[in-house]
Length: 154
Image (cartoon, rainbow, N blue to C red; front, side):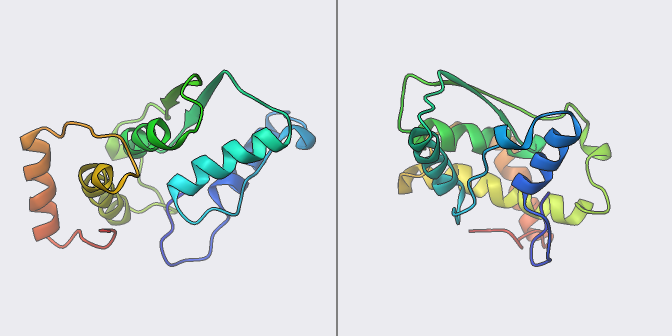
């Protein structure tokens, strides 16, 4: 869920509730909630797993459809163990069906534009690995910013 400026149940809380509803025992769910940004989420989760004696060889990262690339770039850069394999996935939905009451279309577009700017800028700051952004994608983001979709820019 992407609720900027509104009270909400954290993504971790939402996913934990779903996992419990699907039969995952509560004592098997590990939640790291001290992070303030995505890079910290990665590093703090790694540290928490290490503290619990867990050393995963592979991870499946479930993310919002429009945040897969940023998640990949951040994990690739911030996860301390380069031997860990991971896959990033999301619900396979088309854009038109993703926005909803909790994630209205305008909010999703603001976040998407902000994430694209982060994908461009954050490798230079050491937060993510570099990724190519096609010129037509960057041009589209600039048109969206000019149209006022700048509420989630870094």
